[in-house]
Amino acid sequence: KRASSDALAELAKSDDARFVVIAGPKMLFRSDTELALLPLAEAQQFSEKPVDSTTGAFLGFAKGLPLFAFEASTSAADDEGFADTRTQAPFLDFTENQVSLCATGIMTWHRNSKFCPKCGSATKITQGGHCSVCINDDCGAASFPRNDPAVIVAVSSRDNSKILLARSPRHPEKMFTTLAGFVECGETFEDAVKREVLEESGVDVDEVRYIKSQPWPFPQSSMIAFRAVGDADVPFQLDEEELVEARWWTREEVRRACKVQGATMRKEVAEKALKDDPSLTLLVPPKRVVARELIEAWLAESEVS
Image (cartoon, rainbow, N blue to C red; front, side, top):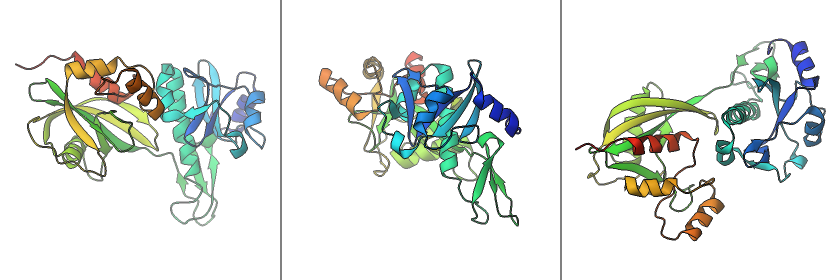
């Protein structure tokens, strides 16, 4: 469908078409657990120009409906239904979560692809929003949405009794998560895991093994998840630009943290959780993000005698 502008135009005008509305890092939600998938007439109120198949991007089909995404006009972006995609998307069902991540990635790429990376001329978006073509006839270079691979890893102690979690400057108080970082040129994913953990915490790791992957378009990544093992008795040497604190946590501490509900990556949610229970020593990411999946997978493992 992407290659046929006529087919996309008909889809966008159809009664079945639904539109996802983006406003920078935010997205329009119908509720805390439901994405706003708007018919054309409702979507139009969020744009100062006519909404059609060329306004943003064609996302594909989900739940039997053709889906499109577009960027809201500045004047419409203050609607109270908009929420931060990074912290709210994990509470959607699987399909809507995938739709939200796809829409975020594509529209972020649109904002960052207005000029040709080869000659600097302006570009135009084609193929249903999935290709950017230089308008300079002497160039004509085409570019496509990119993903920068990043690794994320759950590091356990040698006896598997503790897990290494850290807090970055952007995280709320007592919010700790698994270590992560971008893969560098000429580097394997496994080597990136070892380097990132060593650079950020001072801990050498081995027994690196792949677990799964997750789209993470914040701004344009794919998160590749791993498990690894390290020495819990080695003093930390923190990269203080990346981390505020790192600790080895026991299963009892982590299990208690996993009982806290809500979007704990949000400052106001974390503050309320700590106010409701001042004895909490740890908060962890919410369900349906890969960091939490790694943490819960470790919880289910046995200690090594």
